[in-house]
Length: 333
Image 1 (tube, rainbow, N blue to C red):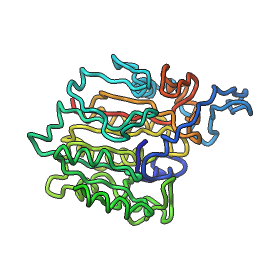
Image 2 (image 1 turned 120 degrees about the horizontal axis):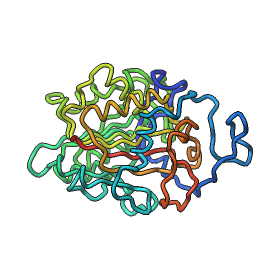
Image 3 (image 1 turned 120 degrees about the vertical axis):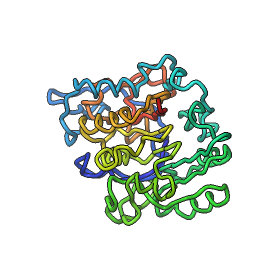
Image 4 (image 1 turned 45 degrees about the horizontal axis):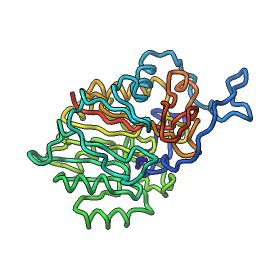
C-alpha cells in the first residue's frame, strides 16, 4: 500500500496514470488463476491474466528487463519468508521493524529503515515522504526517531485530514503531488482517493528544495508511493538533475506495473531503475504486492514473460496470481 500521486505523463505511457495517495493496492481479495490466451495473445473469456492490447509490444528477452524483474521478485535475496517478502542483511545489517500498517497481516506491514546509513540519534535526519492516502504511521514513527519529515499528497479531499494530523504529530504536510514536470496533471484528474489540483504538481528536485531549501540535495530518506508517478518522475530527474540522488542514503518505492497506473514501455522502466542503481543504490528488501482485484493479474504480458510472477509461498496462498506492484527498499552502497 503506498500512496501518492503524480501523473504518469506522456514521457512514459500512452495514457496518464491515476495519481494519488496510497492504499489501493492493499484492498486484498482472493487471487485468480493463470489465463488462457488465444493465438493472438489475447485473454480468453475464462482466463484472468490480461494482455492489454494498448500496452507497448516490448521484447521480454531484454536482459536489463529480466534483471529487474528478478531483482524485484527477490531472486538474489538470501532470505524470503512466507509472505513473499525477501531481504539481504549483507546490504543492510541493522534494520528497523516495519513502520506503518501496524497489525496488518495481509501486507508487508510498512516501510523499513536501514540504520547502517540512517542515524537519527547522532546526526541530522531529513525525510521526504511522497504519498499519504490518509495513512501516517511511517511519518509519525520517523518523527519520533528524531527526523524532520516533510510529506506530500495532492488529493484535494484529504488535505484537511492530512494537515491536521501532521500539525498534531510534529511533521510538515504539503498539499502537493509528484510529477515529471510542473503542471503535468490535468485539473480535476483523480485517483481512488479523490481529485487532484493541476497547479499543485512538482518534479522531485522542486519537492526537495521546498522541503529543505538550505540543503536540497542532502535528504536522508525518500519514500515514494504515488500510484504510478514514479516512472515519469525518475525519467525527469535523470534528464534534468542526474546528481539529485547523490547524497540520499535510502530510497523506498512502490513500483507499479499495471496499465491502470500508467506502466511505461520496457525501455523506460529499465532507464528509471538503472538510474537508481547507477546513483549508487542496492536493494536490501523487496515485497511482491498482489494488489487490489482491479489490478491483480493485469501486468503487460512482456513483464510476465520477463519473469514477473508471484513467489510461492505468499501471503495470499495463491500460486498463480500476478502481482501488480513491488515495494522496494534501496540503500546507498
